[in-house]
Image (cartoon, rainbow, N blue to C red; front, top):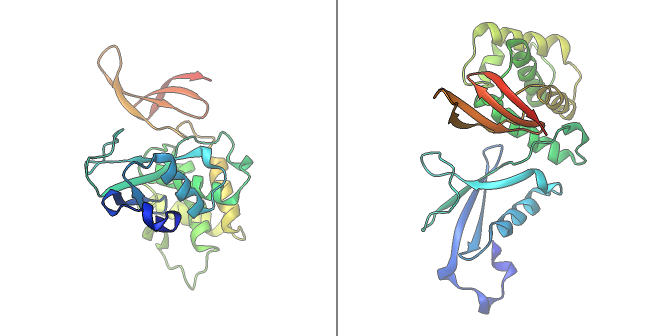
Length: 234
């Protein structure tokens, strides 16, 4: 793919490698890079592919087969990277580009699914209902039979009671919202939660108890279990 950027005489096939970037919707972008290419070069190519102008919120990182983040690439290909939000906006509604808001929406949706965005049941039901509205539109009894919300995986695990609550909100409160409006309302709700934008790193407190350290858009936090025990505002 990148051959069109290079002259025929400068190409060196022995120094070219395929690189795959896993995007926020789990699709993949594959390109060819030179061995000595900088990460910024790959990131700029990807942003061009996505028509992404507000780049500063995003980044790419390598995750090894054991799903551990590392700072250096392995010595040999294949190279698989992940495109993720790096800095969560304090006010997603203030983002200028719709594509930027959509990518942040996908990231927070992932955070919810992987258990990083923690919230009470009523908030979880509302967030999931916004996702439903964005993805399938208005409730239609002809298309959406009983239990239709159970076909979507919003959280690591959830109960039938929560599924019913999600469907109830979707049916009665969100009709008429466009996908873009539902995504924006999802972002506005998510940003009010204590764990919005939290990327936790495991540690131990002075007593040896397990805890997590995290930087957020609003400050530095310490978490124990599902609770925020310390918060230092920027």
